[in-house]
Length: 447
Ligand SMILES: *Cc1c(COP(=O)(O)O)cnc(C)c1O
Image (cartoon, rainbow, N blue to C red; front, side, top):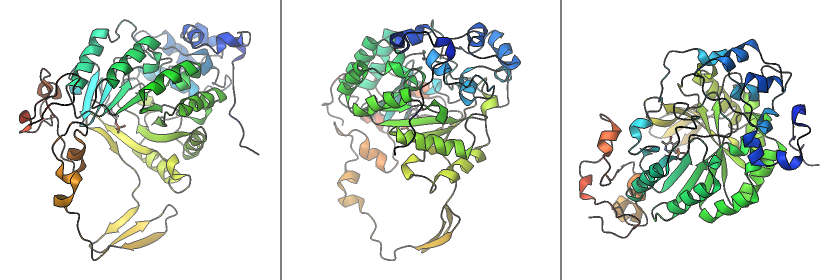
């Protein structure tokens, strides 16, 4: 007997919508719910929700009929409801909150492009999403339809990437890249693939979760022309795993796109080891590998979602060893002020000396491991990878990174030093001797 299939739900209010409309992502997008009046047709609102929905200057509200249907109308504490329906908690300021908590703007050499790590860059391609998460880490830029990225912004972003040969991994995010007009997305991917040093492309998207109807065979046919292409989706609670999401993930993985999941630890939504265990186990059933579990960022309006970091540790303790190793995500705190993602978690090493380490396993059993006495240290002089410290066309930056010796090459025409802010830049003193590559070419000399 196979495991229980994932459910498919449609709120009674939408019962008369013909299937061909319900299953059409255009219909889902154009029939999103956003007002107190809309939601009252689906479930009664609480006073707190009503107060928030009538407040001015609130972060955008918009939810697809599909996603609203996953909410249990009888439960004001429903974990899906809390992610998308605002409450009065959103209006409360809290200590430590910041507008751009990850200092992404400070690491942006051109609008929308965040170059925080040596070999990869984050490219924000739209401010629009299929639905809006109340704890959005980029609520400062997301949601406003009048403030989107233009073709000219894309060209600047692409130009920076063309001139920065150490970037081998480009992560498309936003907003949600899968809400872009199909032609625009295809054009962007085509231009990225024309850059020889870009080895992998990643898409970060919650569209499969909010609007699985968008993952059509035409979309997966288009995406698979740009391999190697990876995708991270964003599921926070097992109730989000429906028959429709399972089918969308099946189409994506059959198109050869490896899927990961990035979730956020949220008070009142998934701050429970049992919920998290069910979440990761259901994710691997639909062939999605849990990738990151994020500590909630210090973002305006999201104070009521924050948990102590100890809650994350408790969850990881309940996963490691207790379930499939590949179902355990890395728990990260995205450092306020732009330090990047920092992995944290329970410690399994009790102590370490010259010759042995003392470890504990997931059950609390203590053991020791004897270190070797005759280890012959790795010799960088005879190692081809250590020796190729020069950045060669075709393998730019890779060896330089192996020993943590990060290098940023300053592309001509981009004032990275300025954009990286005081004391934050990593430009090496001698890096000016490295000449930037020309546009669209990977064959120039480097010294
Ligand atoms: C998260 C992130 C990345 C990708 O980080 P990985 O750990 O490789 O997934 C790249 N750039 C920025 C700015 C990010 O926030």
